[in-house]
View 1 (cartoon, rainbow, N blue to C red):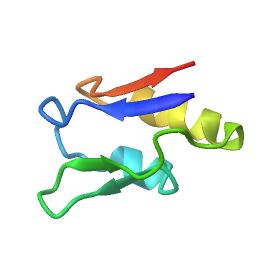
View 2 (view 1 turned 180 degrees about the vertical axis):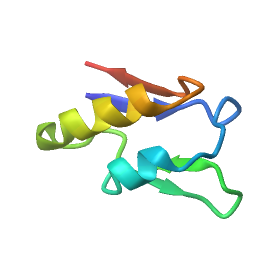
View 3 (view 1 turned 120 degrees about the vertical axis):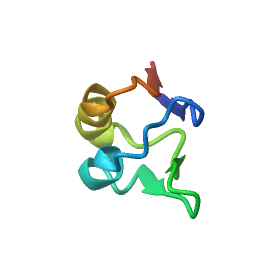
View 4 (view 1 turned 90 degrees about the vertical axis):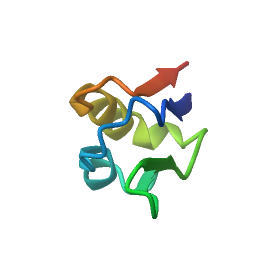
Length: 63
């Protein structure tokens, strides 16, 4: 699995970082940062939930 974020599309709601703090955090500019681009499979459900929660569909999950 590969996780990426379109930082220009990010609405800075922070829901992804709350749902999956092992993969997402909020940067100093208030925009999401991907801490693990290739997280462990055990985090898949949380990553998918975070992507689904994103109001601007800024999170992409491949694989």
